[in-house]
Image 1 (cartoon, rainbow, N blue to C red):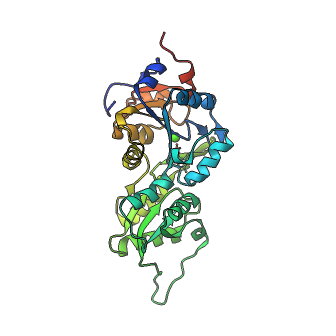
Image 2 (image 1 turned 180 degrees about the vertical axis):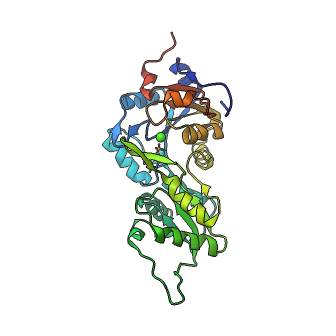
Image 3 (image 1 turned 135 degrees about the vertical axis):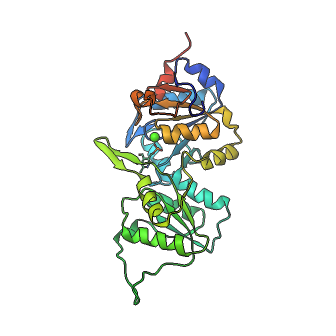
Length: 302
Ligand code: PLP
Ligand code: CA
């Protein structure tokens, strides 16, 4: 359903939904796992969908790991998922640079963690920054300025637990002073759930710092932007109306599906409560909602 359309319907006939699409895109945190814990019934649900010949794709806005590292995480959780089926926002940043033929003699400055560095390396891009810049202090040159690399042609910003003033200033200098330098954000999630006890500042906070100093809007490659949807639709040759996007978050997952023209299913196993979904303040209505994806195993037409 488009934004502002009819309120989400409670999913009652899972078979009808499954039969109506050829591909399921699953968001990861809140749908497949919560932190490091597998959500109940996920292996059986994925097995059911695969046995029905559905293509499964996994998309996460968490840029801290590469798709290879996510492959290991799926394996550790006992899920058999191919690396090629995983689209993390770290991978999306590298795929975006490839899609625009970003020059290999230019460099990428990274405010973010290891996943982004690994994906840039695999794609053959030169990079600097990353977690090790977390220890750096600003060194003033005579004349009281900080040096930066004039060959940086893109700054990629993602979630970064080693964030500091050095990095913001470095990224700011690149964006403001290097002609044509791109500002790319892996995602803008306001908060994330590193632990269940509270909400934690998400990737949007690091992106916000660079936005604040450059006054430039970033190009977002993660959800809800259409980049990853276009990329995977093209890669697999899928029509987006044949996709059901399943996620736990309205302003990333459900909007991502709606922006792409997919069917959308909200699960309540993550960050969104039924109360939030049904609040008059919420304008993002998925086609359907249900408690968790294992409901696919039990919700059959009467
Ligand atoms: N960003 C960070 C840093 C996270 O820790 C998480 C969830 O764990 C996310 C983003 C959102 O991930 P997903 O898109 O899989 O829900
Ligand atoms: Ca999620």
